[in-house]
Every structure is written in C-alpha cells, then in structure tokens.
Image (cartoon, rainbow, N blue to C red; front, side, top):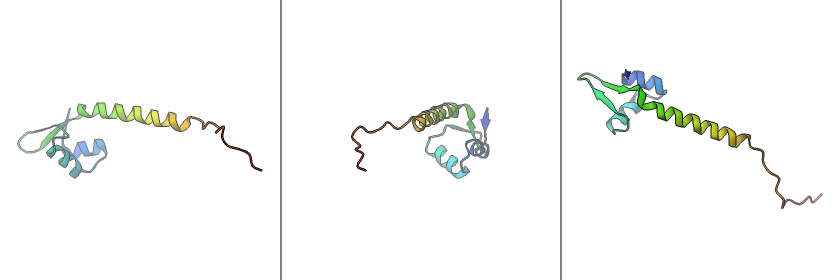
Length: 76
C-alpha cells in the first residue's frame, strides 16, 4: 500500500517536512509518479517491530529489582 507524504507523516507521527527531507536523503524509499511522491507503507514494519522489542527490553530493565550493595556499611 502506497501513502502520500502527508499520509506517511500522519502514520509515523512526524512532520511532513521531515519525511520530505528523508526522501531527498534516500533514507525513505519513495516513488515519484510525476506529481507527488508515494511511499510504500510496508518498509516501516521492521522499524515498528524493533521499537516494540526495544520498549519491552527497557520495561524489563526498569522492572528489575536493584540488588543490595554488599559494601554498604550501616553507620548509625
């Protein structure tokens, strides 16, 4: 499924100017149909999968209990 720059920006929740810049830098693959650029939506699937894995990894790290430090001395 192909999206316009505006639709891609809404899908990725990014500004249209940023999407245009990334297309010019060849960081986002796009096809020019003579009037507008069209972006294949499927190219972002891997990005979303990696972001989900990263989110899970961070959540597991934050949920891990802090071990007690054996070098701490009670000086009361």
